[in-house]
Image (cartoon, rainbow, N blue to C red):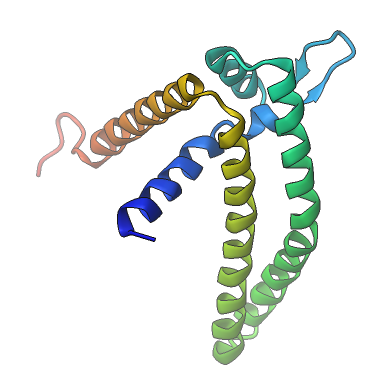
Amino acid sequence: MSTFRIKFAALTACAALGAASLFAAETSAAGGPAFHRHGHRGAFLSKALNLTAAQQTQAKGIFQDARQSALGVRQQLKQTRESLRAAIQANNTAQIQQLATNEGSEVGQLAAIRGSAMAKVYQILTPEQQQKLESLRQAREARRAARHSQAGAPAAGQNQ
């Protein structure tokens, strides 16, 4: 696979991650989506992408499967982090290195599960929805870049 395609796939997955809360939402008793974990972001994306009920149902199933497959990895990651804290307190540098490596691997496994789920969800979007999702991602990145550039600039009145 070419570098461009790999980067494009990674960017697409990242862009769609912002929509993950939308797809993980459950349908409320009133018939509308109930976005428990991520508040109004999922509702915003559902409306912005104009998802059909069928798309929401498909995506919900995809993310439920992903959550289920990630459960063991998340539990292991929690244990690794607890062990890492203990190794830090004991100043066990060899164990710290090993546990940090394990933590990185587990975080990578979770990212792969999320990325695979998002790739599946991306495929159920229409080309117009995919384009809209990309424009939302670009707008989010522009806002993030603006915040970072402002945070790096010295405050008004400070000597440089």
